[in-house]
Amino acid sequence: MTEKKKIYLYIAANLAFLIPVPGRFAYAIIMAVLFNLQMAAITMIFHAIHRTNLASLQNTVLSLTIISLGILFKQILIIFCPVAALTLGFCIYLPTLAFVIIAFFFLDYEHGLKGHLIDNAKKTLALSAFMLLIFLIRDMLGYGTITFPGWKRLIVVHLFENSDIGGASVFLATIPGCLVLVSALISFYIFVSKKLRILENAPDIDSAEEGK
Image 1: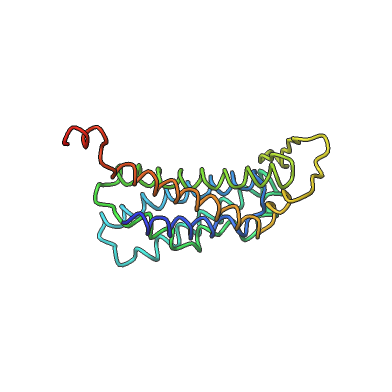
Image 2: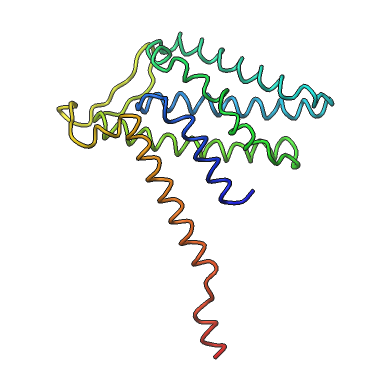
């Protein structure tokens, strides 16, 4: 897969996760845990399907698996932190609907189960890290807090004496603010990647001088 296509898939995946979810760091942690568990589970089931020659049932089995995991996770979350389960609502099932993510994680699987699990783990952790960074910035600047999921409640750490911050930073807590933040970070990533590729492809100055 080309770097350009990877960027497009990362954008689609992140938009699917980031935009509908409320801008609290606690909710990003919950979504990241669910996402990593789902991708690890369906990776193992994916290989089990192919080893048992049931490839014709692949889409059905994978869909049922990821939906079942989402429902189970939602029920556990209701027990552990009801306020988070109520607030997230339908967002819990976003990984199920983001089929572009599943396609991205199952393009190459020739290296066996272990290699595929490691490769997918790297991708899920990269997406999760980006998602956590976005929500940490939104939580800190938009609300003046850092939140964590806790037993029966959200743990709120206030960064300022007066958490009712105002001004332009509150914009980051909104959906348009999230879009702007995601766009800025992805643009920065693309800019840095291009500069690094230019440096890698540039001829060595010392070698050029020796050739004269």
